[in-house]
Structure formats: C-alpha cells, structure tokens
Image (cartoon, rainbow, N blue to C red; front, top):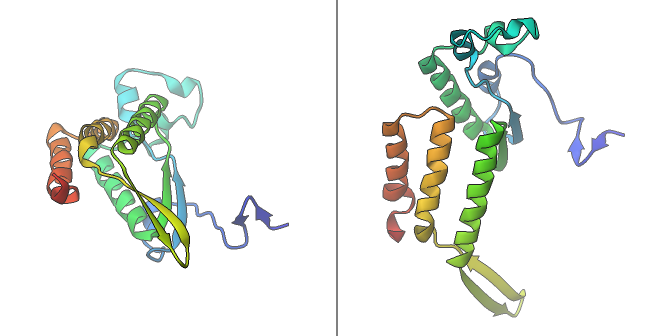
Length: 183
C-alpha cells in the first residue's frame, strides 16, 4: 500500500542538505506543501546567558553550530528561504512554519478575532441562476479589520525580530498597496 492519508509516497520526496541550496533547484510553482521548523538563531543568545545545555545533550542546538549566526546573516537566510518558498509553492500551496507556543497561541487568538470581525462586516450576496441554482457568496471588507491586521503584523514582527522601522513599513505597505481602494 503506497497511499497514506492522501499522500502518494511514490511522488513525495524528502531531501537532506542546506535547504537554500536544495530549494534553488526546485521548479517554480511545483510544491503543494512545505513543513518547516526553521532555526530561531538562539545559539549565541544561549551562550551569552551562560547556559550549559551541552551537558543535557551533545547535539543541543546551541552547540551544534547551525544556530549561531549573526542576526543580519540569519535574517538574510530567512528572507532567502521565504522567497524560495513563495517561488516554489503552487498558487494554492501551504507553508507550515513551527514557532514558539506563546506566539502561535496569540496568533491563533488574533486570527479568530480577525475572522469574527470580518464576518461582522461581510456582505452576503445571493443569486439564483438557471444553471447552478441558488449561489451564496460572502464578500469581506478588510478596512474595518485593519487594527487586527496591524496586531498580527506586530506579533509576527516581534517573532522574526523586525525593527520598528521594518514593522512600520509593513503596516503602511498594507495601507498604500493592499487596501488602497478601500481606505
């Protein structure tokens, strides 16, 4: 049996190596799902705290070397990684990124708040067609939910160590380009 939960293992593959090198070789818009637990660049932080985690486990990340980048290099690698993910994911592909539980919990809470808010401001359109019968469509207006989008942006900016200037750019980018006609 080669089928497990709708995943055809004959056409699925795992690759071992530096993901930035491997992703460059993957054709554009060819991947359905990427699941990743990226490095959070905590090695130097743990060393500065004087944490002796090596006693707990020899291959502990703080001593393995792969999580000890200078912040600018880590940020560049993460940016390259996300650009490659964007390039190789199919139009309706999924990127699953593992992160700290407290950030994830807050993100889930904010997303629920956003969906509740969007549902409050939606417009339901109903049409009756001869061919398809009754069709209901919900049209969402994001403008009233802008403060919640900003909270989500701020949370993710904190998680990815963005500067206040970078966060300000993201928030204002939304205003200028993603929602311009609605504001």
